[in-house]
Length: 255
Image (cartoon, rainbow, N blue to C red; front, side):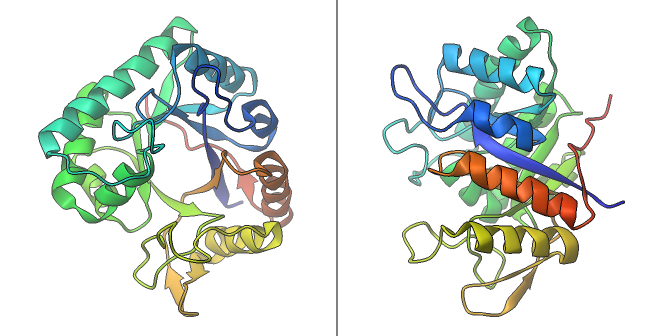
C-alpha cells in the first residue's frame, strides 16, 4: 500500500493572539510543523502544541522563519546565508529543547513562508539551511518544496528529505507556488483542495495556473492550519486519501 504523510503548519498563536485550531487538526494529520517564535509561536504555545502532538502521535517538526512577526513570515527580506544558518539553528534548538523536556523527539525541519520559497529557488540559501539542520542532527528530515533547490541541498548535505506538495495552493508551470498576491493562488474550495491532494498523492501531478499539468515528486502533503476551515479540510483530506487506498503515515526518522 502506498503511503503519504499529511502535515500542517501549527503552533502559530502568539501571546494573547490566537491563530488556528491545533486541537481540531491533530486527529487528521500525521506530522506538524511548529512555529519557533520568529513568525509566530512563543514558548507556552510551543509547549501546548508539543503536548497535543504527543497525545495524538503526530510527528513534531520545527518551522523556522525569517524574523517577521508582524508580517507572519510571509514577506521576503534580504538575508545572508550565514544569517539563515544561525537563525535556523537557533529556532530548531529552541523547539528541540521543549520537545526533549516533554519526553519527545524532534522529527523534521520545514522552513516557513518567505524563507521556504526563497530557499526553493536559491541554492546558496538552501545549502545554508540544510547545513544548519545537518549540524544540529544529521538524521533530522528536511522538508522542502518538491523538486526545489531546498530538497537538492538536503540531499547534498546527506540529510533524509521529503518533497512536499500543497493541497490548498496553486502551482506555476515550473512547479513553484503561485504567490499569495496572485488571484486564485490559495484554493478556498474544499473539494478542489481534496482533488489536488489525490492527484499529487496518487499521480504526482497538479494542474498549474495556466491549465497545464506539472509533475511533482510528493512524499508529504501540506494543509495550512491558519485557514478558517482548516480542521474540517484536514478531516476531508484524511478520509479522501484513505478512500483512495493510501496509507496516511509520517515517514520514520532514521535512528
